[in-house]
Image (cartoon, rainbow, N blue to C red; front, side, top):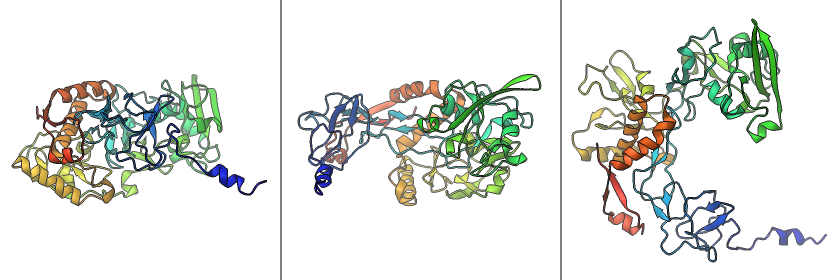
Length: 426
């Protein structure tokens, strides 16, 4: 074999339309419905993740350069080759452990994903939850409780839906208590669950599809067992593997006041997870000026009953960026200072950004976007369990509450031609 053959074959020639943003290119045209993101300046950074684009004709297929009239080519904040107005909802909150993101009016992509820090309490609405009612050892209300983990409020049924389809839900407790004590690696590689940890081992579901949805799960051993217990038909669907998706999600409730953590059913105090956000003085509502203001449900469920130093002063939201997202009217690293004038909030943003880890220093929302986030959260709080129906409604209402303003000099310097907007506080 020619020793130089492999070298020749490994060489690639920069060509327009090959699905890669090569040197001298700014974008890649549609490839089977996919458009590669526009790279301002055409630096040619290599392969760029593509996404379904609502913008067509923004990339010249002959030159792989953006159309002369195009400000952007693709992205959640790009429509018709132009940037959408500032304040448009681009990533709805997935559930109460997540935060919504809004377009900045300056970038084609949605801002980085922000959500509540791990360990914040959350609860699934009993009226909309499909959790099993068979778990006799777990109270009906307690069973809906969980701890936020990576931006989701983890429940067995939500995990079952991701694994076995939208009609799937958690199986009867009998599946957990009988099988997880006898299946190898049910509580981790080579570990059979002890009695107190069976609800935190392998995930058991029912009413799902014949095969698991994730492609990687189909190559593994999966089972669909049907039996009877106490004269009732029982179905136990599970994937026998040590992959993360095979287990009950971290933070799911497993008993009254206990949650799953590393395949164990323990009290939150045993985890000893300390918040990375600053603490400030908290005064119970009714004893402080401004009592009765909206407080995020995850924060409400964790409030002390006596004056004490609390994370984000018991009113802000501690995010995965390790900073407090302060509600309107409050500022400071721990949201402990009253906002007296609008300009104070701008100082607060700068102060918070300076104390935020480098990875999130550019993520801290500006004043108007922060207010939009809180408006959205308050709207969702008034309609618990209806995230999906609120997304379009919230977006419409927020857009109606926008007023267009002229570009700043900084925007003109960036040569962005889309209109920016400021949010009117309605």
